[in-house]
Image 1 (cartoon, rainbow, N blue to C red):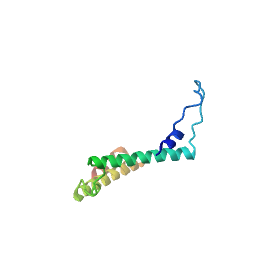
Image 2: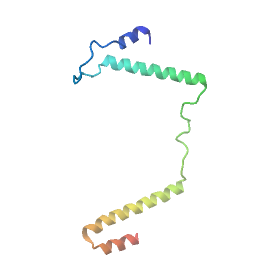
Image 3: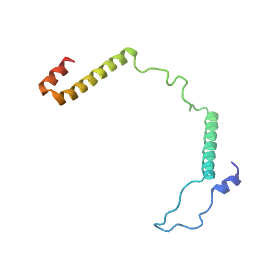
Length: 110
């Protein structure tokens, strides 16, 4: 950005608002574009500076590729979740129509 562009963005307020007075803070399209271009330019400068310093700042290519858990372990977890879901559904059914002792016996069978 050139200095002339910055002069348009930074300006002194015409008058200080009095306490309790509200200002209309809606952003216009040109001001949104100015904020966007300033942020983009800052990101570009940071990118260049980090590259020149040789610091790693990007995500690795295989960042999402490695699995933390084995497939066999995930199958066990899925099985436990399904059992918990069945127990919860059976509990709901038991509360509606069966005596408490029946729902407990049913839960023990699962």
